[in-house]
Length: 163
Length: 163
Length: 163
Image (cartoon, rainbow over all chains, first blue to last red):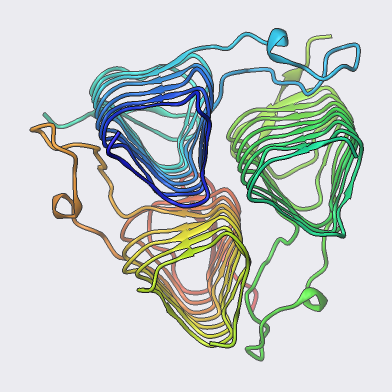
C-alpha cells in the first residue's frame, strides 16, 4: 500500500486500503474501503459497508457509518457525524437487543469534490451533490444540489458556490 | 462478567460492569456502572457517578458526564454530549483552578427505552421520558415527556411517537 | 514539567508543555504550547501553531486547530471544535491534494477567563472576549464581546454575565 499508519489503531483485515493512504492514529476501521491518497485523521471510526474515494480528507473525530458512499476529492471536516437510521432503538418490542436484522440502512451519498464543514451532522438517506459545501455546525436533513452552499440547523440553501 | 473488551481502553477498577457488557475499544471509563448486555462504542468517556442500565447502546464518540442516569434499553447515538454545569469556569474568582468542591452537579435522567439521535447535546438537569426520541443534532434545553419526539436547537416538541 | 500523562498519547517532541500540565490519555498533540497547570481531557487533538494558556481546562473530545490562541483560565467544554478555513477543499483545481500552501489560516482568539460550553463550534477568525460565555451546542460565527453570554446556531447575544 505504501501508506502511513499512526499509533493506536484498530484496522480490521476486512478493510480495503488504496495506495498511499495516510492514517494518523487512534482509528477504528472495519469492513470499509478507502481510496488512494486519502488521509484519515485521528479519533475516526469508519464502519463496514462504507466507502471513501480517492484524494479525500476525513478529519479528526469524524464518524462514517454503514451505508455512506463518499466520492473522490471530498473534504469531510472534524467531528462530522453520519446517521443511517431515522428511528434508532436499542431493543425490539420484545426487549431483545436490536441487531443488523432489525433495521434498514439508508444509503447516503457525498459526491465528488463536495466539502462538509466541521461538526456537521448528515441524516440518513440524503445526497450531497458534486462540489457542494455544507457550513460548519449544520444538520443536513434534505439533499443538497451540486455546487450549492447550505448551512444551519436544519440546513437551508444559501447560494451557489462561486464559479 | 463474560463480556468483551477491545483494545486501547482505560477502565478504572472503580467501574462496575454487568454481565456480557461489550466495549469496542478506545474507551475511558471511571467510577460509573454499566448494566448487563450494554454495548459501549469507541472513543467513549463515561465519568464517575454516571450510571447506564441494561440492554443499552452507547455509540461512538459519546461523552456521559457525572450525574447522568441512563435507564434500561436506551439508545444513545454517536457524538452525544451531556452537560452537568450551566456556568462552567476553569478557575475561581481568586484564580485557583476549580475543583469538585466548586460546582453543583445537576442530575440528568434518560428514562427506559428512550433514544437520543447522533450529535445531540443534553443540557444539565433535564429529564427525557420513557420511549421518547430526540432527533439527531438537537440541543435539549428542557425536559422531554414520555413518548414524545423533539428536535432542533433548541429542541422543540414535534409529535408523539407512533404507538 | 512535574505533570501527569495518561495512557495512549501521541505527544510530538515539538510540543511545549508548561509546569504541572495534566493530560488524561488518548491525546494527539503536535507543535502546540500548553501553559502551566492546564488540564487536557481524553480524545483531544491540538494542532501545531495553536496555543493554550495557563490554568485552562480543555475537555474531552475537543479539537483545537492551527491558529487558535487560547488565553489563561479559559474553560473549553467537551466536544468543542474550532475551524480555521471557511471554504475547505480536499484538492486543488488541478486535482492535487491541498497542502499548507493552499490555504490561509485565520486566527481565532479566546481571551482570558472565557468559557465555551460543550459541543460548541467556533468559526474561523472570531474573537471571544474575556470572561464571555458561549452556551452548549452553539455555533459561533461572529466575535463575542467581553463578559457577554451568547447561544444558538448561529450564536446570538443573550445578556451580560452577572457581575
